[in-house]
Length: 428
Image (cartoon, rainbow, N blue to C red; front, side):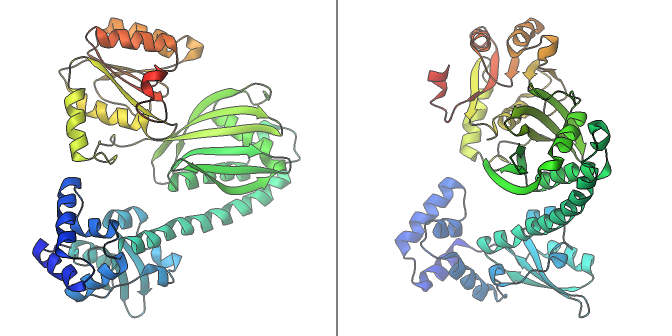
């Protein structure tokens, strides 16, 4: 919704919760941070979000809805695709097919293109209702609840069938049986829908615990019978081209998983023997149509400007730091996307290659073939590169070669496992 600064000032001052000085400070902060004045006022708790929503509802003369107080039918919610709902900040929370009336919660109830899309899709009259950001987030979470309900039903059905075949001794045969295939496929598909970075299968004495890492936090998703644990692990081994009868040593592999919507997920697998069996860790790497931009990653306009100045220098080293799974490689790819022009020769050494760039010469680490970060980097330097990207600095030899390259006319990009940027120096 668009509202002039003067009109917004008039509305919030009349509320009595904000004075002229508060509004001036919020205006300056909004210009500095790129936020809206309203979001600054709400974020600094000068005005409650619900009350601000009521003010806007009264001003625009549109109904307001709090989705936390609504009962949302999963079948109704699913009539609008999740991707579209999130991109347009909408939730379809009520639909009477007989009367031909749909109720749509929106951050912008004057987004007529979106209203027309819903009207045409449902063949119904659409009542656009204003809602707050917190209310909308609550409503959008119902998509995950809907997915979770369907997921639980599918898994339960296949567990019963899997227990029937668990008594068979030929793992290679039982691991390709449809119930086991369905369980693993649905776990991966469910993990992808929840934006999971890692899937963990953890064998316990009486169960197999399945946990997802979402936004850096481990979450328990479900518990499977211990009897099907060896079969499920065997299924992962088959997909990852690993030795199915090897249970004593760690194994690494990878495979590509194709979802029903046609998108691909690259899955990197590590299997480790533990006390009650074999633990499986699967890193999910989404194949994207394009790399994310720095703006997509939440870098401010000011930060993007500073970074672009540094990355366009002809030599030096730029390190992206942070804990595992926090977006270091994604940030490096965003930088490569900016630098990838016909006037430079870019080479990379990665493990794994998560996104393919045109004109960028990308090499995959392959320890079995003798290609490590260190000797791969040494070979890359003979390829006349202008820019070198090293997926990760893991050892002394790699850092020595990388620093030497940065000091001899190359721009070197890499990542380093530290908790924050200042920790990179002592780590080096």
